[in-house]
Image 1: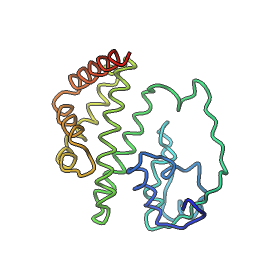
Image 2 (image 1 turned 90 degrees about the vertical axis):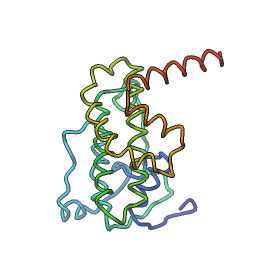
Image 3 (image 1 turned 120 degrees about the horizontal axis):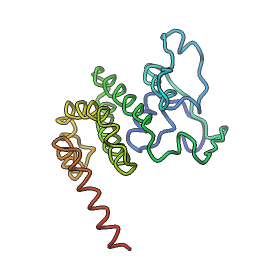
Length: 202
């Protein structure tokens, strides 16, 4: 679609986001919707979420639909210093993990979603570990320990799929095993490694 407008299966946007790490596909603010998609499917945004509220329902909106992508730049996004989306680690970002888990479970329940599920497993693990590290760097791992314990149960449940994933390098699989055994030790080792390599570069 780089050369112009194209119409594709809407779920392709999820697969692209999972594969590339880009996040403009499963978002609401950069799209125009026919309101009937929400009304007829009985879909409403989750008002309890601070992060990901505009993306958390799109797997249901997109299912069975097609979407037209335009190359035009029609939306300007301004980042303000200190705004919620620019924080180093805001505890409310845990909403993103809830959203990714919902996506993962949704795709797991659909036999034809093999690649979507496989990539959702990878991205859920990577985001969980990233957030754990960000919380450690920000000094609020202890505060968020109960929330991370709940997410760790999810990771333990999908660990076999994670270890069998063709999309995850061996180093990350070993890290996932280490995290399953001890998140705190895994973070301590990663932090120490980062300091060592950082001092060597300096």
